[in-house]
Amino acid sequence: MRELIEQYELVKETQYIFEDIDSRIIGRIYKVIIGVNAQYMWTLSHYCRLENEMDVYIPSAPFGQTLDEIEFKLGQYVERFKKAIDWKVNTSFSFSD
Image (tube, rainbow, N blue to C red; front, side, top):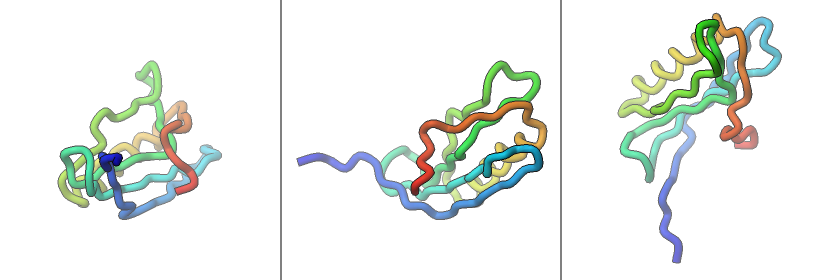
């Protein structure tokens, strides 16, 4: 029998549309049922790069203990797109969810 090691529940999905970016940026917030030691996590369909960065910035810990905290963290990253000079698809993001 296989042990269940991760389980997430989709809490919120938001689409962000920016001028001069062809793709819609999709942000998702999940409640962690089983998995990492956090209550919530976020993910984005795309990551972006600012002028002073060598490559797109991928957050190493997109987790939080409250929904408010995780919405704030997601919002902080989305703000980067206003000044982004490059962006690329998050290959771990499932567009079919």
